[in-house]
Length: 250
Image (tube, rainbow, N blue to C red; front, side, top):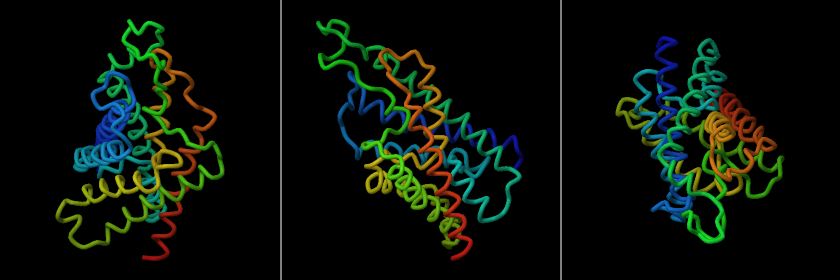
């Protein structure tokens, strides 16, 4: 794969991933969305389908890694680092693009997210809906050590199986690897996503967080930069550990 193909593939695939993921979070969170308050299961499946669509789209160009933790895990296992920077750059650009696209899809809902005593401006009386959680993760309990441990373990639960899928005869030939990974992401969301919102992907969290800080969203609040290192460091550590474990055990 050429550097150009890798970059384009990762930009497109990651943008689709974030469009679906941030989109389902917006659908469930924002007032005046037909899917508002439809719940965590809907969010988990929305992200899973985002992985499915993004990975299958990017696969012919870049292999559809879409996640720096996966890229690092593969590099640690194989010792091949020469194209890592291309993957990471494409993933970051794609994540930011996907966040912008999700914002545009829900532009009217974001603009209606304002406080009003009379309700005449379209907002509910309970005030504006926080928007950072649409773009990036927020822990339920702000405990940096516990949050970091959660992200490391959840990322190992993602990357180690992905590496092992390469040894599963027939998955690659049948073209079902991305489908299995999509369901894996759904499972992680349902089982391990409660404490932190399961970033498990540094680009997925950091790219949209940057976009959130710049978008003209009414009453958007803080972009949570005090927490931002956790969903970056945790998945990167988890990805590296997955590569080490896979290399040693398989």
